[in-house]
Length: 284
Image (cartoon, rainbow, N blue to C red; front, side):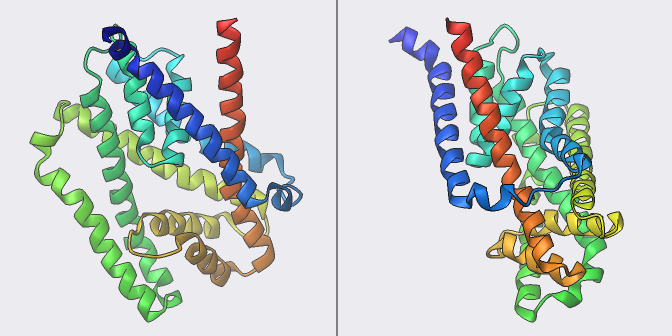
C-alpha cells in the first residue's frame, strides 16, 4: 500500500496520457481530417508562425517554472503534455503537471502552491488582457452585434471581471508565492497572451495574404475576446460570423479558421505519438 501511494503520480500521469490520446483521435475523426487537409495554406510562413503560436504557452510556462524551480530541459516535454491535457479538459493539465512535479521531490518539495498560483494568474491575466482588448475593440465592432448579442456581451464582460475579483480581494489568503514573484508571473502571462494574438494574426495573414496584418490583428483580438466571454453560446460560430462580416471572403475565411482550429489537434496527436514511442524505447 505505501508503495502504491508513492507511485500514484505515475499512475495518474499514465491515465491522463491515455485519455488525451483517445480524446484527440475521436476529435480529429469528428472534424473530418480529409475535408481540410487539401485546403491547408501553402505558404511556409503560415506554419512557422503557427508552430511559434502553438509553443508560446509552453515557452511561457517553462520560463516561469525555470525561475521558480530551476526546471530542467526535460520539463519542457511535461509542459507540452500539460498544454495538451488542458485542451482535452480544462485544468487537467495542472493536475498532470502537479503529479509530474511530485515525482521529482528533489527538484521541489511542495509543488502545489506554485502550480496553483501560476494557474490562477494565467486565468487572471487572460481576463485582464481580454478586458483591455474589449476597451479597444468594442467601439469598432459594436455596430456588428445584434441587440441580443450586445446584451449578452455586456453581461459576459461583467462576468469576466467578476471571476477575477475574488482572487484580487483575497490575494493574501489565496496565493503562496511572494508578491514580487506573483507580479513577475502575471507579466509573463500577459506577454504570452499578447504574443499569441500577434502570432495568430501573422499566421492568418500568410494563410490569406489579401487581408492586411492590421485587420488580422483586430480579428485576433476579437477571437480572444469571444473565447473568454462566458455567456455567449457557440463562440466559434460567432467569431466566424464576425470575421466574415468584417473582411468578407466567406469560403476562404471559413476554411482558414477551420484549419487553424484543427491543426493544434493534429500537432497534439503527433506529439503524443512521439512521447509514447520515446517511453517505449526507454523501457526496452
